[in-house]
Length: 230
Image (cartoon, rainbow, N blue to C red):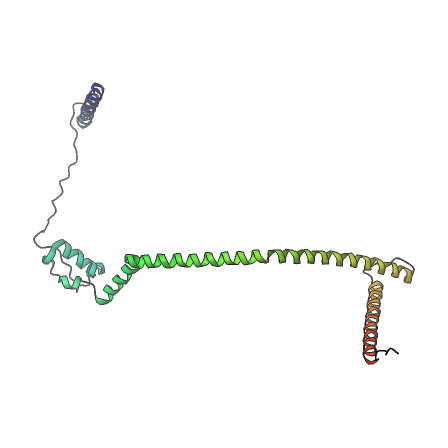
């Protein structure tokens, strides 16, 4: 308590000494240590305030700014001067179109509580339906997972087997090309590709001939009657 009072007294004393020092400085500067100096003075005329007759802009005059001819400025004048502004309060009320626009904006940005609750319920229902559909899709995919894994493994085995067969077939074709031409042939050379095309053509003919023979044997077996036992 004593410390706070001492601090306040010290502050008051310091401000007093500071004001005295500043006044002495100003006095010394004015008198220049004993000699008076001329100082400039300006006495502005007081503004004439006409509070009895407020300023009302002439809307028919071209000198009147456009912003003083608006309904917003009329509302400002009526709010400041009341009936003295000469403005009909009914003219300040919004029109039917403006009122409908205000109501629409009010309903859009500040809807009633019931409307907000219905929107929240509809949004929650939509989110629940989306979540349920996602869960069903996940469950269906999980049910298909074993078959998908089995198909993937089968395709992987088939691909591996095909690569192996292609490798064996390629080695066989290289050996056959070396036996036919007497030297090792580049697999990318036209001779090798031509030989491969001939071999594939011959194999197709053989497969076609085997299918035809098989059909003929099956037809002969159907026509030939079974042997009867004596």
